[in-house]
Structure formats: structure tokens, C-alpha cells
Image (cartoon, rainbow, N blue to C red; front, side):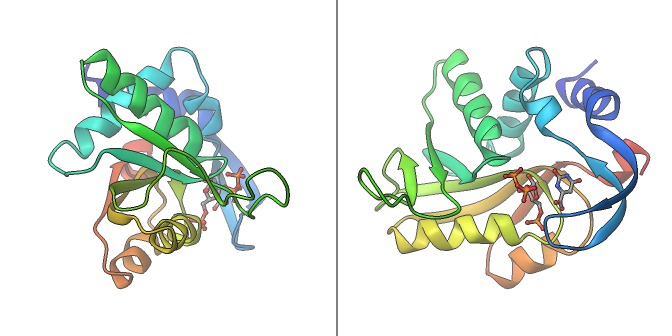
Length: 179
Ligand SMILES: O=P(O)(O)OC[C@H]1O[C@H](OP(=O)(O)OP(=O)(O)O)[C@H](O)[C@@H]1O
Ligand SMILES: O=C(O)c1cc(=O)[nH]c(=O)[nH]1
């Protein structure tokens, strides 16, 4: 079994929930993909890291991150997978709102200024969360090389990210999950 096949199996077993649900965008859907159950699973998380690193292996970047919370375990899985293969990848976390105390940062972790970074997501519906992270990185002086998500729901994220002038990649699509 390849890593990607195994990941699809974990997503199907752990994350796909059928039934009416209201999404982050306010839209209604007939199924939900609770990727946190995969990206925070002890067996599946390392596979997420390897599959995502493979998906973007041809891109030139040295930091990865996205909008908290869904993006965080994806980015750290990529960091650990990269370290396991002798490489290095730094991680940043984009807060939904800047902290009012401490250093009052919107982006936590590694500094993105002047660097080429990849924006990630666990799953994308409208692409709004990924694009919020893109805007924050650009505001902080970073260059976003692409947006990469684990599961794409085929509901407009690819188009919106393309409109923002960025390449959009996903590891797993609806047909892989039988949705
Ligand atoms: O493409 P979009 O329309 O933005 O939807 C996808 C987003 O929705 C979910 O997060 P949610 O907003 O539920 O917040 P969380 O990550 O804090 O759980 C998911 O993790 C993505 O971040
Ligand atoms: O659009 C969303 O809010 C969303 C969809 C989905 O399948 N999974 C998730 O965590 N969020």
C-alpha cells in the first residue's frame, strides 16, 4: 500500500461523517470531513506529513503553515516528515486575530519575512481560510509559493486560490473518498 492509499483509508475510516452540517463558510453540506481526527492521529499524522511533502516536492520553500487550527497539525507533520528524511522545514501559525498581549503577533513561530513559504490546510471548501493565511503572510513580508491542502471538497477553493494568482494542489479528492 502506498502512503497516499493508506491516507485515503484513514480519512475514510476516521474523518468522513455523513449527514447535514453547517460549514465554516455558513454553507450547508451533506457530509463533513473532520480532518483533525486524522492529522492528530498517532498512526495517520506521519503519513499526512509524507504525502504532503511528496505533493509539493518540486516547489521551492523553507517554511510551511496556515490558519489555525486545521492547518497546524498538517504543517507540523510536514516538519517532522522532513526532519525524518534529513531535511528542514520551519512552521508558522496564523492566528485568526492578533493577540492583544505579549508580542501581539498575528503570525506565531518562524518569521516569514523575506522567505518563500507554503500555505497549507487540512481541508478546503471555499478556500477562504487558506486565503486569510495567504494575506497575513504577504502582509508580514513573506512570499507564498502555493496553497496545498490534504482534502479538497471541489466547492470553489481551487478557483478562488487561482484568482489570487496562486497554484492550488490537493492530495485527496472527493472521488478518492467515494463522496
Ligand atoms: O475553505 P473554507 O471555506 O475556509 O473552509 C475550510 C476550513 O474550515 C475548517 O476550519 P474551521 O473554520 O472550522 O476552523 P478550525 O480550523 O479552527 O476548526 C477547516 O479546517 C478549514 O480551515
Ligand atoms: O467547510 C468547512 O467548514 C469544513 C468542511 C469539512 O469537510 N471539514 C471541516 O473541518 N470543515
